[in-house]
Image (cartoon, rainbow, N blue to C red; front, side):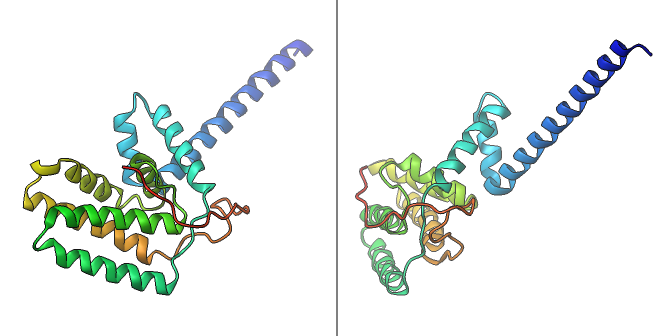
Length: 199
């Protein structure tokens, strides 16, 4: 076989290997996103024009989350917030609308103390999706009901309150968060203090 034919053969083999490596890396990346985002992965794919667009967006969300230093609550803070929730829950019987609003506000306060960005609902939902994809649907549903205002029935508000409770429990008792490191294992800057939320 002539030298030029060997060269062509080697180039073809190299291209095939490169293509196979790229395919395997893409499959691995997709698998990691599916594992991290769970049902949120399917939701993103359904809402996007194509799978690549959905995966690019989820990678961007994951990257933003991984650069945030989320910390657990202290035992004292956990007890106080649990007591605050009980007070709001008791108020729901007589004033369901205000109670649902207060439940939302309490969740934002807890998220802020833990280090999550809280200035925008969609940003909060993204961060919840990155950490707790099993409850972010609850959060979106509760928020949508709350936004109906006077049009929401008492039953709607009760449903919203139950949705908020699912997220509140995660925010209150989740002990799996990184402290001082992001999810890639590299140091990240500590975000301290409470944040004000804007509705």
